[in-house]
Length: 323
Image (cartoon, rainbow, N blue to C red; front, side, top):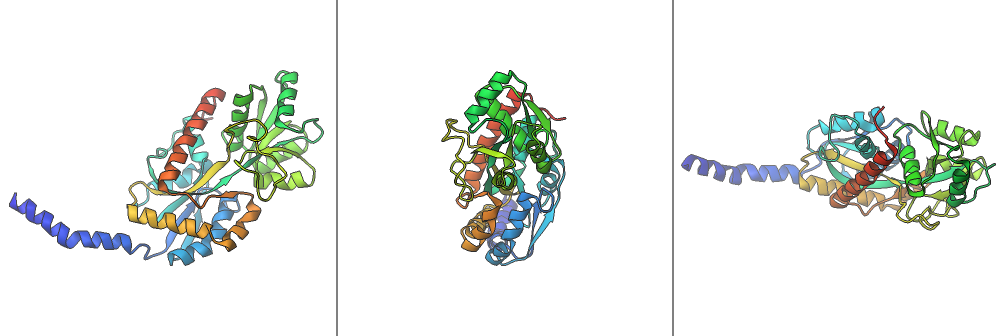
């Protein structure tokens, strides 16, 4: 008993201050950020345009490394198995939730295997249609789909991709029947749209806006809560009569489970400060994303859990399962 008491005193006097110093001294070496998607993908572009400001804010070198594959699961698995010391972080999207909603088997659990830090931005999607169709609003599209009695097709950037889930959310909310044409990515899905092989699809805004502006596709609505600063002419789904259709998907920073709170808070503060910088906002305006800047670990965790419930319901409705 006396030995245990003395051991406790030793830890309190000698070890605890060292632990505290290790946390408050963070960071004292380069930080690696794993982007779970390919180079030049939307999420990769955002991170690389933030790197210089993040380096300045944290006072350390930031190494961005792409580990793409399995719809973001490859990079997520790598970070879930890394030490929880704040030197290996993950930048990933709501595709993590969609994999979980489908019941995809992964080497981690969502969100239990991670320490959420902040949501960096939301990716709004634009409901686009083939210009030759006589539709100007989502309601027009619903009316046409009803008249066609299921003889309508829509594209997605892949089976189980965000564009697939958002389209199925639209079907669930409206009751329309339409057949999915899955493709191998956003460019191919947009090509299906431009050539008229599909009636509509939900395209991420950064992919949708160029062909919208040159008239190759028609924008009916955007899924963000508010109109996009870069495209204020496109109305939101909500203002067109579809309440709670805020289907923009999150893109956030994670650490492995068990990251000490002081380090978690340090990182959250750093990312929010970077997002508040005018030069960073200017660099990211063209990406057509909605920057957050007000996130924190608690808010991000709530967002993840609420979002997971939405997509779990959609997966059940549309019977979306792992291929």
